[in-house]
Image 1: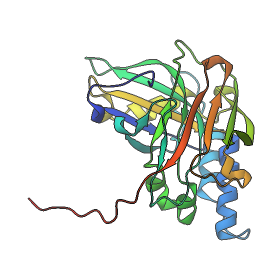
Image 2 (image 1 turned 90 degrees about the vertical axis):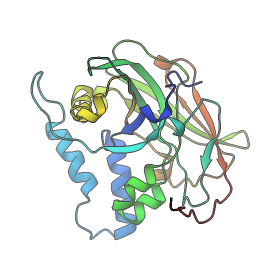
Image 3 (image 1 turned 60 degrees about the vertical axis):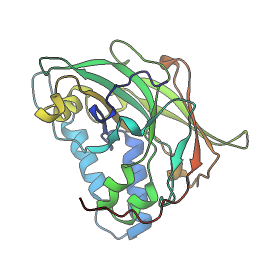
Image 4 (image 1 turned 180 degrees about the horizontal axis):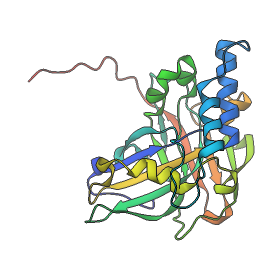
Amino acid sequence: LAPVDHPEPARFLITGTGLTHTGSAAARDKMHVLTHGTDAAESDSLKIFRMGLEGGKPAPGELGVQPEWFFKGVGTCVVPPGAALPLPAFAKAGAEEAEIVGLYLNGPDGRPYRIGYALGNEYSDHVTEAENYLYLAHSKLRSCSIGPELLIGELPPEVRGHSRIRRDGAVIWEQEFLSGETHMSHSIANLEHYHFRYPMHRRPGDLHAYFFGAAVMSYASGIKTAPGDEYEIQAPEFGKPLRNRMQAVPDEGLVAVTPL
């Protein structure tokens, strides 16, 4: 099971912010260059990453620069650790994003309370995103996985972990990732402010999972994942690793709406 859940899945909001780690900015810019050429203007990804470096860690009590933000889904998109991550028939690709996730519950007074942190696989479609940056929202509407363990208290300033992909039992890609505020362009408090400043995100009783961004991704190394591949994300601070296989699902065909 995931470390948190909600009896009403529609009240479990899954969101996140990208371009918070050096590796993610470099990977997205590489994707931009491959798509649009080396003579293309500086990508919006690098621009917003630079904004984070310059103003994402304000002094206590001060307001920092606004980060990128995306909506991923509601509680029904969270698959348990060990369960399959579905690859829709319409997807162009499925790739892991090894991240730390903040988990929050809004109190009766509308105040957000941080439960703790967990490992997460944000699992996105980077090929769709690369076609046009305005497809980013579509590329994020995929399943994800969180857990299996919950870290209570403050996040260590530095987290070192490994992200791996296994195919037929053999590791085909592995890379160390560095996270925690030491390796981020935004403070966690700044990310939390910009997420919870919206009253709709402080509705009493709602649960939130907030992905803090990835430092490394296999697609930036030219890896093309395939159904059956197993993703593994591990960091000592979080205990047991998070593992999920990617599984292709049948094509649902054209979805038509029935008028009332």
